[in-house]
Length: 288
Length: 245
Image (cartoon, rainbow over all chains, first blue to last red; front, side):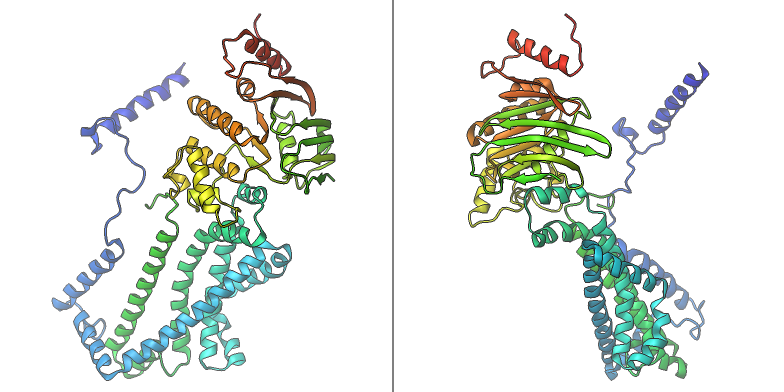
């Protein structure tokens, strides 16, 4: 008897609990929603802006030593200075081209490898293992080898970035592709889809959510690799600018470089996220 | 292995299943089964779970890749399948789902027409997720019809729908079958559904045909008709359900 009585009491208490302090109580018995609620507009920039405000306040009140952390406006001034001299644009362009080329190469390689490995048994045998091995070796640990193979020129940098991009793209695309419901494969068989139509209509859109997740990691990863390759050995680029600034003790130039990495990293991630939302508009998820 | 003849058959050819045996491991799911379906005939297959009715349908559809067995199936090449789930590609809009694998210059027009036939005019650009279960299943019907199949295979197509929606779907399916005249093989566990829709009802039991009866009722299939009740009771008995006298 007590066994059945206890949960009943518990249930009643829960109901009262919900109706009492819940902000929804005036609407009557509406359930507390389990999703986070309506999205806040500009949610990506609010956090960074608050941080910037705290920083500006600290500098303005003289709480921060400018040799340790220069004020935001002195960094902006230094940035403007570098733009006037023309060096910032040049270094930025060089960095962007490197990152974009590496990203593009890694993307193509990752997608092709994921498709071949996911759609053929031979490909799975030949590709999946080696990529998993590659995954266990950090791309940056390959830099000494890549320098010996490709020298210290542009290709070494681009290939390092591409190798870093390839892994997340491959992993997530391959996983997305493998988790496509087999019922859709059966459907494709019954409607007599050709191999190419099957890939176009079922495989690619089915693997798209995985690919886009991989793309977010890849884009962030490409910036990471960029920073490292530009600080190891370079004669141009944002990383080079920062390395030089360290040698001359120009802390505000270092911050200009960091700000650029932050802004472009954030911009590219936002771009990928908005691309995801558009491309996956057919999905209804928790975040929407 | 199974042989699938019939790639070159004409549009209005019959379905012929001969000595069909299907095995999962040591378990024989279909045993030496023979079944003919005339052009334009509507055959319903009833059976308890595990009686082999889905296995039979999948064999006719050519979907049983990893199943061992023997026998001959002659079926029209242009067959189409309606599954229990609507099985719409969630990333394709409704019209694109209907036209999956359909080619030709007038494909778009035909797809719209098929959607209009199932009462979904104007929903061509909706996502499948935006539709109700019944609407999704109607899209699946349109997807089958647009191919003008000589044989329509339906595997418990209304099993996941609520009772009212199911009745509406019955009316729709009868209308569509009358207009397009395909042969139909309907797998169901619903005796009333089988009698309502089919020209002939076959009961499968342990991989064999237990009963094969024509439905000789007036076209309206009034449930109040004593003949309806008699047939219903007879089929239920073969399905192992004893009716009170």
